[in-house]
Length: 616
Image (cartoon, rainbow, N blue to C red):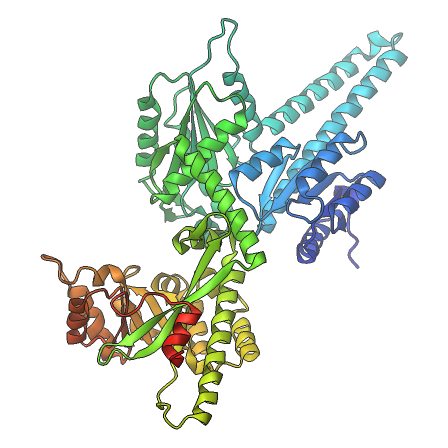
């Protein structure tokens, strides 16, 4: 029988999610740590004071008492003040990270976490704590020995000198470990904050240092870790650090914040061109591939730049704004640099407020669904409807899906939101079908025609859910809707990016007679040659192509190619954004069968559709 060695340290887990507690407990216990776990902040405080652990892993988002308050209260109590606290959270925003370090946290791990990363950070901080305790112990021992052996000082001088040397070595090692990253040996976040504080303080004459802070993030680095493993990823990070360092002067200090994030402190700086020229030089240097274990790996970096200003008084504000500028560079296509402006910060704050409102809106069900008809070109008969979500904010009024859907995608809120839309659409169409059936039994004049289907968009996050088919089956069973009346719209990029798993999912949808529609076709991977591999029922030609129809000099070969290929594969075609009779005439002449757009109908509310369907 294996006997675990609990001498490695005692760890307290505070998390309101049982799955997280079970996973972390299992992983840490297997490594020889003694683990206790609690499900809320109050129990965490009781557990920490009753039997202080060596380290605490603390979740941020918990009911009643969040992680920030728990950490603050721990730091206020003498018996728990020195216990290192590592925050674990699904929130990856800069403002949350800054707050975590501000209340006393020593580190920050983002969910979903990597096991190796959790173990590495736990071991690092426990080693740091052990070295601190050993240093205090050595100091106490030395003082006691000096008192006891004053008379023997001459004979014990050599031994004492050896112990003093050892103490200095441990102290030097502790200092280095506290201020440097163990992987790259670069200055770490703590040293960055210290140096930023120094440059923010005026000198004896009241003059401030002019500086620039550059925030660097490796583009698509996660792909390397996921495909080649974390060992290759670590070696790549070391190589990236060395290449960046080779471009710098003594006045430019490279530091690693963690993960694939680096910063460069440039001081003094006299004009913006010094930092922007360095940014261009660094990005140019990344054009040469890295060779790791015989593999060539191409890597690019996105850079945010912030310059010193009189309103900066705290290091975390400088770092926040540099991070904001970096994310702006990411949003504008990656592999570029952007200089921070106040409008960027205002946008981040606005986005944070919108995310908060979005969470509340989901809880309070502030959303509604409208349906835009899809018609047959031949007789303008409605054959289907597309379900479109609408948000009427109680204070701001209508908020466009283009503003909140990307936030829902990034935060994962799109999963409950998308499921709600699917359930609403299925319930509504089942109710309409039952109403038509009742009318049919009482009216001999009712025209017998096919009941229209409903199309629901499926996001990338939903498409990659492990239990996607289970959730769809559950909703169809709850609402009673015939699966043949449901169409799911998926973007071309989602299918191509997850082509292996996509094939299995699409086949399962086909087995349930759920039709599949590829949305925005032609704007993503231009995968005309791969289309035959997937069991697709409908292609939706993106409105950007339809808008070109009738404009002089526009090449419309892509529309002809899409229509010809779809017809050869017996796939139906729906054109989006049909706004003029000329659009309809041209598309119909090519063989396109169906259209959707303002020429026929705008998105309609439930009462408007009922007036249309039931002649109310």
